[in-house]
Image 1 (spheres, rainbow, N blue to C red):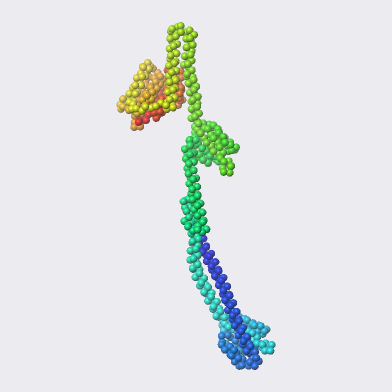
Image 2 (spheres, rainbow, N blue to C red; image 1 turned 180 degrees about the horizontal axis):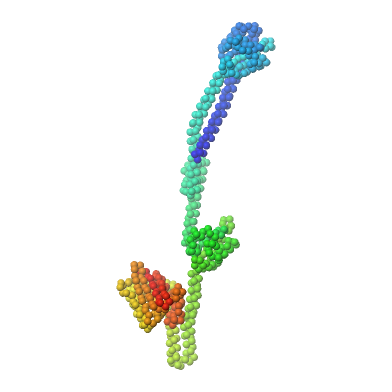
Length: 587
């Protein structure tokens, strides 16, 4: 902006100088012409006056009389007077001795006078040594030109005057330039400063400093421009704030969405993903953004539907299976992205992970099938033996008693199954209220062992109780904890061969309490371990049914532990035994 100020200053000063020079040249020329015209008129009158005075023959022919007459008419020597005959000989000159003067026959003003005209000439005088103006008029006697009178005056005064005028003009020009440069500099500064201020604010706006404002209070056009810039900055600041807020909201929504969101451009490249997609695809967002969707997604089915949406610009919903990084079932919504011109410029893909829903649906289906199967067995037995009795078996007392005992056992088994199903339903729906009390863990375990002692003795099983020191006091629901221990002990007794051993171990630290139930039973195959907490799942179905189990015990244990905010895990090797570990928070 400094260069513009210099250019503006030099331009204005140049214009001022040019105008002053042109005006000086014009006035100098006018002054010179005015002086020359006045001098010309003065010399013409002087010459004509002398010509009239000496035109008489008796005067013109006598040199002495001629000189006297001229002195009478023009006694001063301000004007140089020269009388010349027709041959160019000087008859009289009031500034130089006439006989010594050269012939003037070739002087232009003399030649013009011989023609009867007034001759005017301006030239350098060798005699006087400076410019002179000559005016010659003819001397006429009886209509005949007998000579010429020439008046001359020095132009030194006129030249000096013009030179003085140019000197004054140049001095005035210099003073004008100095004063003008100061004034123009101030004026240019007053013009440039607002522009510089506006430029500064505009540059700050381009650098996203929207709080910048132009500090100018003028009411002229510059002030109006400054006001427009300030309004624009304020508007941009408000708009950028709203855009930033919308971006933050959108980012917050996308970041916290459990559903995955992918935006694919019309070039089939991934432009945006949220954290949920990173979890689903098992790849960091920065590694897949910019890649082709078929390369990043690693799912032919998903890529096929994306291409279909891009090609047809249609909105649809599909269920897609992906197998990397793990098998998942996704409910995917595909929708074209339409810009403000109504053109399809990409695809928005929303992925919902429904793997757990499908798993639960399968579990529900399996549960219904298992319940139907488990209920059908005792009901079939009861129905069969009842029909047999009604058909006449009641007459045989021993057979009748045996059948009735079987009916009673099956009814009891059916009752336990329904009771366990209802208990499990209550536990899952958290309809079982917790009564938090201080529980002596060793006493609770001893009580549970006492309940299972008869069954263990029938199979000659030994049960090792935990060490009584230090005593563990736990704030929990006593009934829930007792049911957990009883179910684990019941499983250990049921699946441990005769002569086996069961060990109960407890441990405590500042944050948790650990309860372990170990046995030397048949163990669990590795492939079945992930499913043992499912309802009605049995590793050895025949033996489980013979043991009187309902297949719901471990499912109940798992949900009870979760209700107590704990965790349960299992370690087992087939043929070597099983260890269940329950971890509860120490409250």
